[in-house]
Amino acid sequence: MSAAAATLGTIQTVQTALTVLHTLALTAWHFPSDCPISNDSSYDFIIIGGGTAGSVLANRLSANENIKVLLLETGGYAPLESELPGLFPLLPNTVYDFNFTSVNDKYTAQNLQNGQIELTQGKMLGGSAANHHMIHVQGDPHDYDQWAKILDDDTWSYKNVQPYLKRQENLTDPGLLDSKYSQLHGTNGFLKVARDEQLANINYLEAFKELGHKIVEDVSSETSSLGFNEPLLYVADGIRQTGAVGYLGAAQARKNLCVALFSTATKILIKDGVAVGVQVLTSDGKTSKLYAKKEVIVSAGAINSPKLLMLSGIGPKTHLESLGIKVVADLPVGQNFMDHPSAVVVYQMEANTDPLPAANPHDFPVPITTGYVALDSKQLYPDYQVINLVFPHDATALLQLCANVFKYTNEVCDKFFAATSGRSTLFVVYNLMTPKSRGEIKLASANPTDQPLIYTGTFTNKDDLDLMARGLENFNRVLNTTYFKSVDASLVDVGICSGLSDLKFWECYALEMSATMWHYAGTCSMGSVLDTQLRVKGVENLRVVDSSAMPMQVSGNINAAVGMIAERASDFILDTWNISH
Ligand SMILES: Cc1cc2nc3c(=O)[nH]c(=O)nc-3n(C[C@H](O)[C@H](O)[C@H](O)COP(=O)(O)OP(=O)(O)OC[C@H]3O[C@@H](n4cnc5c(N)ncnc54)[C@H](O)[C@@H]3O)c2cc1C
View 1: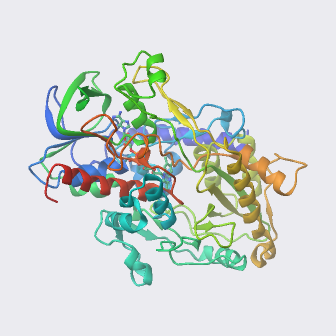
View 2: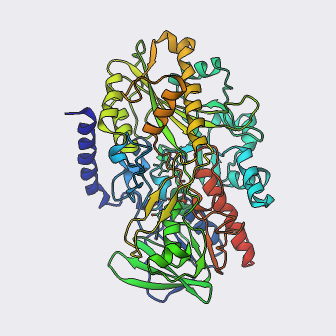
View 3: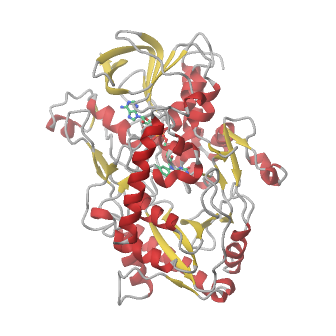
C-alpha cells in the first residue's frame, strides 16, 4: 500500500477517535458560554462569524456595557487538537472545516487529489485561525501604501494601519522585546506571539545568507520586509492563540455579549435599503429572525461572506437573477477572489541524518524559517515568500502535511516520503506574494446549505506563472551553497516535467504543483463592493469586516492584516454611533 494512502487512513482513524473527546468540550473554559437566541430578539449589533475578524469586533463593540452585541457562529468551540499547535495536520476534512474545494480548471493543480484545491476554512469559534498554520507577520509597508493608493484614502496607508497591526499583539518573545524591533510590536493586545528558535535552523539561515539575503531577527519593518528569519508564531504557553482565545476569552464575563454557537446566518434582512437584522438557522432546524438596532456586520470569511451577501440579494445582477434571487444591490460581490498561489518543493540531504528533538504537541511541529525575496535587487518588497520546514529522516509528519493538508496525490507524497528514508529533508512551501490573477465565488443555487462554486483563477494572468517560475528557479540556487553541497543536497524529483530544464521546468512545476496558501481575500473588496469604512455600497447599516474586504493581497500570511481591518473597523463603528471607546 502507498505510504500516503496508509497515512490518510491513520489520520481518519485518529480523527474518528477524537470525536469522542469533542463531546467533552474540553476547550469551552476559554470562551464565553453558548448563549440562547429567541425569535424577534434585538441587539445593537449583530456580528456574523466568530473567526479572526468577528472575535475582534465582538470584544471591541461589547466593551461598553450598555451596548448589546450578538455574535453568531455556525460552528462550535474549537477542539483540543486545534489548541495543540503540533496537531494542525489533523484539522482539515473534519466537522471543523467547511471542506470547500475549487472547481477543477483542468489547467493548474493537476497533481493535487482530483485536480482540485482543498480550500480548508475553519468552521468553529476562532474561524480559520483555529486551523491555520500559526505564522504571524505584519506584511510589507508597500502593501498598505498600495491599498491607500488604490482606494485613494490615506486611512489605509502603512503609517495609518501600523497602530492597528500593533494593537492586536502581545509580543512575548524575550529576544525581540529586548531589540530594536520591539517598537514595531504591541505588548498590550489580545494575541500573544513569539518565535520558536531552534538550533536546527542555523545551517539553513547561513545558506540563505550566502545567497545574499539579509538574515534578520524579525521581518517587521517600516521600510522593507525582505530577509530570512525564524518567524513569529501565534503560540504561547503551549497553546494556539486565536482571536477567539484572546479577544473572546477576555470578554467571557460580559453580560451584554451573546455568543450563539451552531447558529448559521442564512439571509440578511433588508428593508427599504437598510439592513435591519438576520435570518438564522439553529442546530435544532428552527429558523429565527433577529434584529439589529444599529448595524449588521458580516465577518463570515472570504468565501462565506460573499455567499451570504448574494443569498441576501447583494451581488452581480445577472447571476442573482439567474437563480431567482431578488436583487437589492447590483455589486461585484464574489469577484476579485485572491489567494497566494503556492507550490511545495522538497530537498533531500543525503549526508544529513541529524535527529531532531522529539515532537512536542505544544510546539510548532518542526523547525521553521521564513524568507521574503525580491527578484529585482532594487525592489524593497517581496515577490515571493518561502516557508522552510526541516523534517528529520523517515518523518511521517511530512506525509501528513503533503497528503492531508496540501492534498497532493499519493504518488507525489510517496515520492517526497521516499526521499526522507534515512536522511533529513527541507520541505519548502513557496508562494507568490502579489498575484495579478483573480478568481470568483458564485452561488451554486439559492439554497443556503449548498456549497458555493469557487473558481480560484490561479495563473489566469500569465505574468503570475512567469514570476512564480522565475522565483522557484531563484530559490533553487540554494543547492549551490556551502551547506547544501556539504550535505549532498538535491531536489526531489516527483516525476513531473521530465525532459524540461531551467525556466521551462519551473514553469511546468509551478502549474502542476500549484496549491493554495489558504489566504482567500478580496471577494467583497473595499473600493468596489465596500466604501473605505467597510460599508456595503447602496445598503445602509451593513458592513463586511474580514479578509473579503482586502483590495489587494499583503506580502505574507494574512491573519494579522485581517485582525488589523477588524480593529480599524471597530473604531469606525464606535465613532459612527458616538459610542465611547
Ligand atoms: C489552513 C490555513 C492555514 C493558514 N495559515 C495561516 C498562517 O499561518 N498565518 C496567517 O497569518 N494566516 C493563515 N491563514 C489565513 C488566516 O487564518 C485567515 O485569513 C483568517 O483567519 C481569516 O479571517 P476571517 O475573519 O476573514 O475569516 P475566518 O477566520 O475564516 O472566520 C469566519 C467565521 O465565520 C463563521 N461563519 C461562516 N459562515 C457563517 C454563517 N453563515 N453564519 C455564522 N457563522 C458563519 C465561520 O465558522 C468562521 O468562524 C490560514 C488559513 C487556513 C485556512
